[in-house]
Image (cartoon, rainbow, N blue to C red; front, side, top):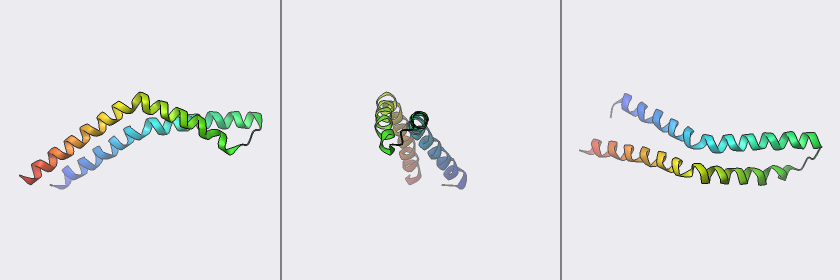
Length: 89
């Protein structure tokens, strides 16, 4: 396997990782920001208050987008296994 193919595979791996992680991370970031603003406005400084809304939103994101995330990972793994099979021939 030459360098360009290996770098291309690493680039694709990073993109797949970003596409799978981004919805969960962005949803968690938005919920944390909203809860932080509410806490600042009401002067409620409870550290555990952000945990339950973040958990609920992350679960909702995984239910809604989980199938597409698994499909994306599965397609990438099929591509990797195909390249492995091509190398061993």
